[in-house]
Image (cartoon, rainbow, N blue to C red; front, top):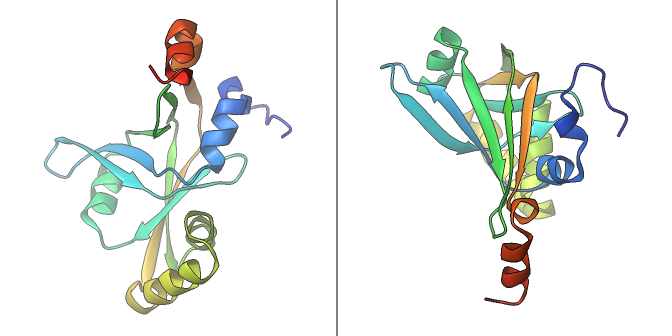
Length: 160
């Protein structure tokens, strides 16, 4: 991947690229409508420059995010030794009729073939409008526990 000049270098690392292409849901952290912190797992689509999260436009999270655009995103491996990609950056919110193309791309990544088609058919039947949450990463950090502790990584490989 050619590195875009405005993207943080951490996004070009093999670990970041693996997590951005994975089926692991991102963890979206934002401030709820009542002023308290929220974290939720959510599908995402990486375009090579931005993260796009598409969700029903009528959800409380969209109303809260439109009021307070401070958020963070984390994509974390599911097994040790853990790896994590953490992101922050400016947010744009667009409302689109029907299903956003990035939602289709995410569904096709998270589900295979027939399952994606079934899910998207259902979504098209219940979602009239989606909010596209577009995050342009200006800060990124990769955490690699194996790099922090080679002894731990070796022990985990041995099954201990």
